Image (tube, rainbow, N blue to C red):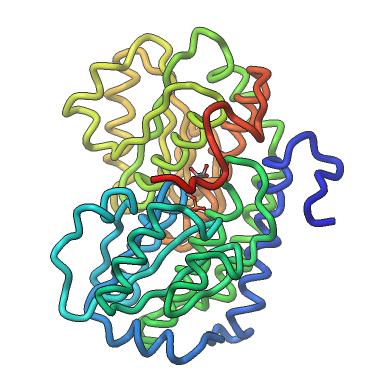
Length: 360
Ligand code: G6P
């Protein structure tokens, strides 16, 4: 059954491995071979008519929203803001004339997001929920809903739902974009990404070794992920994953901000993992990384092939720069997994956490 662990020691590893399949499933459901979109026209018309998109989510889903917003802005030319549900519920920003809301939620039951949707409905605004659980509360109460099709996600630490959320937002942003401006075929790109993710999950031994060297030792109390642009968003998710299941205090950082305070935390041996996939800022991130190594940090670079230099540690296949989060997140999931495993923790059921948080 879909909910069996099968040969896997933990659900998380199974779910990480399923990510190529999840992308292919979404592609088959929402895109034709020549890259045309198969989506209800009403959803597209409403999003088209909106002057601002508000993405509301919590946890990992919020991090997926940070990635999606870039695609809505850069491909679809739609001003987009991303909000934490727990904040937006009690402090709503001044809204635009024609707002449209997108709720991202694996479970469809997160209390904070439900609270926001209730407010949105009371104000008469329209919304779209992207969730993995059909008929969930956020599914039922939004104007529209689309399934993430990731299959049941059982490990508390979310992996394949994040990838599904980013993929589905890419499909929506692509659908809203001016077709003449899009110089690539999304169907092709996502198929290549599924292959790329497969190559990364086939490299498990690499990440097991790196985790054991850098993150598992008891002397490692903290770690940093850094990057700029879409990489900064992935850095937040990477750090959250590590915190959730390995209890290593981790921070994800927009690389340029390190020097404004956080650099003070770097000590001899502190792991600093740099995500370098954005052509415009790759050089700057390398500069920020050297500022940490000059203070004794232990660096690890995750870099796309086109931007790689001698001495880089892990090379990712090249994909469209806004879609790189789909591939760059995978090494960080595996690093978290092997750190948790190496520390003999319960990977799937970390202390103090719940899969779905139904209290505010
Ligand atoms: C909990 C889970 C996280 C998840 C967050 C939001 O904290 O442990 O993995 O990202 O809730 O959940 P949702 O179901 O709304 O995506």
